[in-house]
Structure formats: structure tokens, C-alpha cells
Image (cartoon, rainbow, N blue to C red; front, side, top):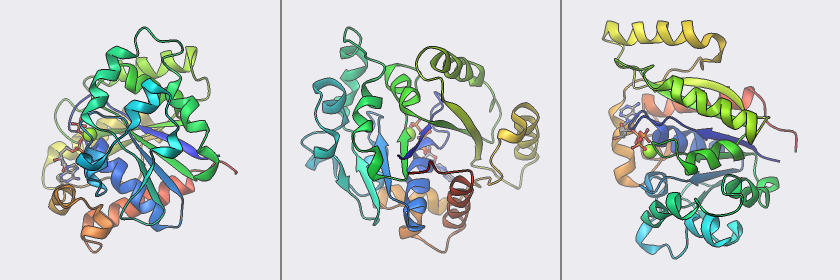
Amino acid sequence: MAKTIAIANQKGGVGKTTTSVNLGACLAYFGKKVLLVDIDPQGNATSGVGVDKGDIDQCIYNVLVDDAEVKDIILETICEGLHILPSTIQLAGAEIELVPTISREVRLKRALSSVSSQYDFIIIDCPPSLGLLTINSLTAADAVLIPVQCEYYALEGLSQLLNTVRLVQKHLNTDLTIDGVLLTMLDARTNLGIQVIEEVKKYFQDKVYTTIIPRNVRLSEAPSHGKPIIIYDPKSRGAEVYLELAKEVIGSGERVR
Ligand SMILES: Nc1ncnc2c1ncn2[C@@H]1O[C@H](COP(=O)(O)OP(=O)(O)OP(=O)(O)O)[C@@H](O)[C@H]1O
Ligand SMILES: [Mg+2]
């Protein structure tokens, strides 16, 4: 069985997709079999691994709404060992279309269980909201990784996210753990970044990843080339830190297959 990690924060632009794509690619680089699940209608993780959204007939929308088989929709990516369950803008309708359906919160979990044994890790890139798509992700996950940008108001909104995690733990997925907070986009030249690190560590203590992701221009360029950083610029600082994060994630325990 794969270890399933949801990358979630309802705040926009904190590094969820950058982390999903690059953690996924780096885990695959270390020989792990990885499924990247794009559950954001923006489809940034899909294009970030080189898949042209215009070429896709069916996406995760069909899995969630039409009960399509996951195995028929998964695509290979430019990284060996990294597969993607893609998303397109069609998914935007799912949030509303799922509302009146039976077992609407467990659809992703059920769908992924059919392929889980084929992977070491399943990484879910969540949208910037706490709606049904994020609830489905938290219900399907063993762990949640929360990217937090090293900026003012970094902790704002986190109590709402933690509350949602607690509700999912109580009602839908008792096994869900918070594996950690990942500090992202640190600008080491500013005192602000250091202050945010201290504040986050005070609040989350040992639940903060040792790896901290700095601001790195190569990381922001890579998506427009449809490549994860280890392919776009393997010698960059961005590649180094995401490899470090992948090691940390592998070290913190895979499920025994
Ligand atoms: N470490 C970094 N250094 C420089 N730029 C970064 C870094 N991480 C992310 N970015 C850039 O910041 C922007 C937001 O990142 P990203 O798309 O990963 O956030 P997100 O949380 O997925 O956003 P959304 O909530 O819209 O899904 C993107 O343009 C991305 O390229
Ligand atoms: Mg995103």
C-alpha cells in the first residue's frame, strides 16, 4: 500500500503545487513509484509535469463524478516512476455536482484504493479551498503536509485548516496525521523569514520539516517548461532542497507493502 500525502492549505500561492510536483519527482528520482494526484481545477500540477491539458479526454473529474476507473486515466510523465492522475478545468464543476451524491467525501479514497498497491507514495495537490475536493483528499490521505509561506500572516487561516483536519479525523478518517508543516519561499536576507520560522516552530514544535524551501528563481521558471526542477535544472538550489525533502519524507516512514 502506498503512503498517501495530501499537500493542503486553503491559502493560495503558498507552494502546494511546487511542492507536490517536485517532491513527487524527487521521490521518483530515488526509485520510488509515485502517483501525483491533481485535484485542483487549475491543473497546475498536470501541466507542471509536462502533460498538455488540451490533449486530455478524461481527468480526475470523471473519477469523482462518473465513477471512471483511475487506471484508465493515469498518465506517464517525463519523470520515470512518476505517474499523474490529471485535472482539467472541468473539475471546477465537481465541487457543486458532488454535493447531492452518496458518499461524496470518500470518492477519491475509494478510487485510489484500486491502484494504491502499485505505488510507494501518492501525493495529492489540493486546491486553495476547504471544500469537498480538499475534504476528499484529507479523507483519502494517511498524512497531510501543510506548506506555509515565510511571509507576514503566515499563520493566518491555519486554525481553520487545522479545524477541518480535526473534523475529518473525527468523522471520516481517524488515521489521518499531520506529518508536518513545510516552510516555503524563505528569503534568508530578511529578518521576517527568520521570525516566521521561529513562530511556526513554537506553534508546531516537532511537526515542522527540517528542510526549509528557500526562494529560488529556477523553481518558479520550471513550470512554464513543464518540467520538475530536477529535470529543468538539477544543479539548482531548488533541486537540492526538494531532494533533501524527499529524503526526509522517505525517512519518516513508508507503509510496509
Ligand atoms: N521556493 C520558491 N521559490 C520561488 N518561487 C516559488 C517557490 N515556490 C513557489 N514559487 C512560485 O510561487 C507561485 C505560487 O506557487 P504554487 O503554485 O506552488 O502555490 P500553490 O499553493 O499551489 O498556489 P494555488 O493556491 O494557486 O494552487 C508560483 O508562481 C511558483 O512558481
Ligand atoms: Mg496549486
